[in-house]
Image (cartoon, rainbow over all chains, first blue to last red; front, side):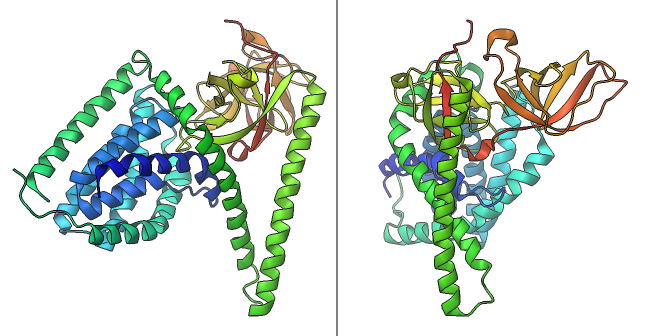
Length: 167
Length: 273
């Protein structure tokens, strides 16, 4: 899929994350659409394709947030990089690996954002945030993963990556 | 994956990390707020539409939950109950919205200031930063520093303004201390976030200080950041600590800050400086 599609898709996901998602909360659980999309893409296609999406997505979230600028960019590219390491070990896009990657990525993403807040002088409450925010969010993301993974697998099969060597 | 693609991805990663570190360190100097302002202008129409859809989604989730309560019923009755429940939820939501708007008007009348109403169209992507976006901006006379109220009291302060939208930092944000005083005893204190909890810190409190659960704190006007007398929080719990210089009362916002849908902005008061 062309990287030029990244901007409108991620733009829509970022807008949904700030406006639609608060209405989709179940108790303390809040899904993270953009994170799930990008990490899943890293699992399905590898970081070669997911990294530009992570950069664009991270900058969009930074632009729409009041967090320290650069926080989302850093958190998103790091989790995509790590997700791709697993992609290479697992040799492809298995559903089980996607679930593990999204679970780990949600926790790592949240912890990285908290680390940025702490480093930039904002007080953070680690235990409360992990228990009341990150873990319920991770569970919600696992549910969200199912349609996202199926859609991306379909896209991957419809538009397979070229196997020709790149010179 | 192709080697070229992989090495390019690694280059992207290094570039992104460097860019993130630069933004974190020099974001203010590089005027990233201008980027946020531009993004807010572009996103305002989309966020307005999506926030309405979000409220619809909340109703839908509520309806699904209520259908679950009738699981023991037979299929026909379940369908009927679900349909009735859906209608009831819609009616309740409508009633709630009406009540919210009436409360806003009531608060507006009781406080007797010029104000403008706005709809909440966006929250922070994560709950780590306590901020929201509203669909009123300089077109409605909003300025940075103006006070924002929910149905029952102060919820935040305008931190940036665009043509049709504005960003509001909530009172639950660690970077927005509010000088308050108890409405009954007139004890002065500061509303802060401490270890994730909203508290009022009272310096030099008398030894016989007593704060009842539900007692309201209002803005004191000290510091010139907020007008005097806006209700802000109510006491959740308070225990006098003889050994402490500052007494701490745990408090709760008067409005549910995570579920704000409509707010009013006090356009009369602009902070000093």
